[in-house]
Image (cartoon, rainbow, N blue to C red; front, side, top):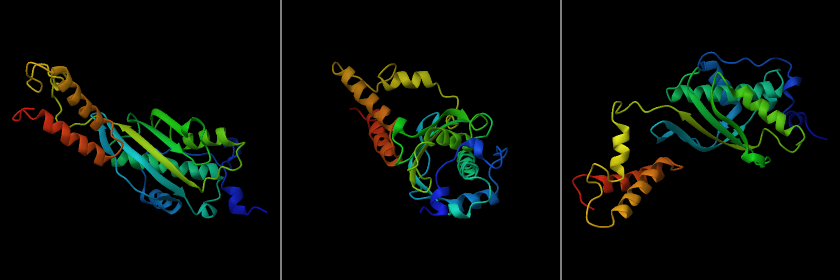
Amino acid sequence: MASGRQQSSSPSSPSSSSSSPRKGVNFPTDEELDFLHKHCEIIDATKFYRSTPGTLKLPPTRIQLRNLDKLPKASLDVNVGRIFDIFIRHMLQQEGGNLETTRYWLNLAHPGYRKKDGFWISHKTYKMADGHTLMNTIADQVQSNDALGLDETMSLTMRIFKQDIHGKGDRTPDKILRKFGVKHNYVKGDGRCLLKALVIGKHWSDKNTASTANEAAFYDSKYVRLTRTNVSC
């Protein structure tokens, strides 16, 4: 016979909640962060890094919900939605975003749920989609999957769309042109100009689409070496 904890570790329908979830209007309080840390373990904590001038990325990070048997008396989906909600607000706060206009996307992958590569919040503000939105998506899609438990290890990826303020005022279109050998001597010579431009462009693309901070730094160093104006290729 299944234990009470096992029975409570599967998501229920949002309509069965014993209390209505409340959307946060501010960044998390110390009490909320204590609640998050008590019930959610971030196994391999990583940091956001800037993957493009307008995007911050949190690489795939394993998380595990815990102490589910010690959650408050509200229904499981409300409590887990609150955990996700605090996490989202905390990440937006850490990276200098806000709850009104900063857009983000989030993917939560569960080992027992392969369809559509997990659960998504796509390019929304917190005001449009919060942690309870994510929990409702999970509950809607897996009510028929009794094998999916919320106490299993999951993988979370997040992007925050926030423009880099460093170097504000620079002429971005000209910079992009120069990277491909236009109006600058990054690419010069009587031959192989297209090949040189493609190599430079590839390193620029690789550093901006890297999946980890170390990988981004590696391609950035190669790009910088190729585009230094005091060194000829």
